[in-house]
Length: 58
Image (tube, rainbow, N blue to C red; front, side, top):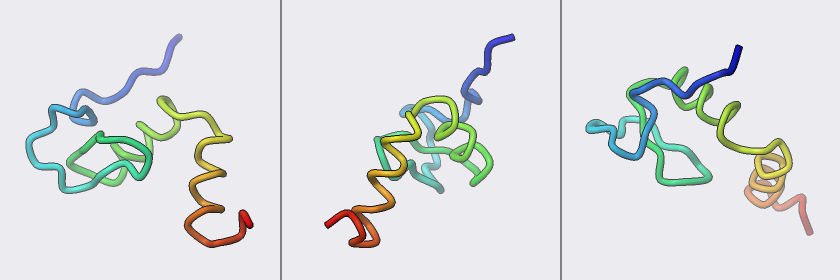
C-alpha cells in the first residue's frame, strides 16, 4: 500500500489556510500539511529546516 497526499494538500489548494514550510503547498488543515510533510519531504530536509529556523545549524 502506497501513501498518498490528501487531495486538499496541493499547490492548487484554494484556501491556503496552512502552508508547508518547505514548499508552496497549501492545505485546509494542519493534519493535511502534516501528511504532506511525511509523504513529500525527506527527513533530512525537515531536520535541516528546523535547525536553520532555530539557529542550531551553525
